[in-house]
Image 1 (cartoon, rainbow over the protein chains, first blue to last red):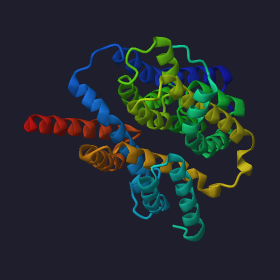
Image 2 (cartoon, chains in turn brown, yellow):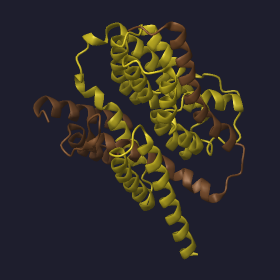
Image 3 (tube, rainbow over the protein chains, first blue to last red):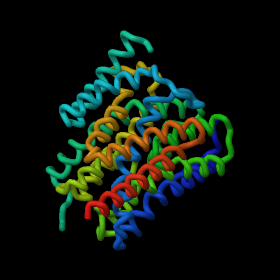
Image 4 (tube, each protein chain N blue to C red):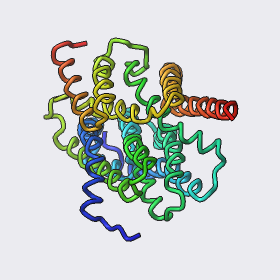
Length: 111
Length: 233
């Protein structure tokens, strides 16, 4: 079913706007102010918290209605990937090593 | 500071960006395939990638289009799914203090989970300017647009999961998380955020688990830091 083109364009512009504004407002307004120390501390913890909050469900849950799953290939591959990341501290190296391990796990050990 | 696109700027930016591009390739192609199945022309998908540039919300939008959801519902869902970028842009405001509004506006367009995770630690370390970060954003953006269009034209002929490429972004997140563990409080914050995110993802729709878990964990981290700071004085 092909959506009607003008309606599609309006939808995309709407999606673009509601995505852009939250990306834009803090950059414009917070970068012009002297922020209180607690807020600077809080914002400094945001990256580590977001990364962990993005990653953990990818490794530990599965399904369109998510449920806990400790048997995913993503989780098994994460262990050697963590080790390589700690050991080499190289982003590119870790990405390639993670891909290799994940590929091998899925080839030889269909979880 | 006149720092037009010098070769070294471009080289350093691309050296930081390639893991993102590698990860976007299979995801973008997959989106293109799904979009085509939903009846969208590859260029219509490319238009979405250009204007919205936010992977997970685009997947959700395509599936909502194919099930005939109303436009307003799709737009509101996109808003909720992408609200987490508000937190990232807030964190980025600190290294970008006092930079020109036009540059910040251009930068805002390219704030994604991936570019944020790559740029933020480099900006904090120093020796990484908004110009470098913009190269990362736009390399990722270009890869995303091209791979979604390519997926729409011929993605179904590519074998799924070849060379483990669909693990690229997870491996990148793992490595960047480790870079961010700069002390015990950070490790604690990460553990709390991960646990909360898993628990909340089982209960809440959309991406609320990411937003709530990271805000709660960052608050706990801040509280502990301020307590420890005060008691040691």
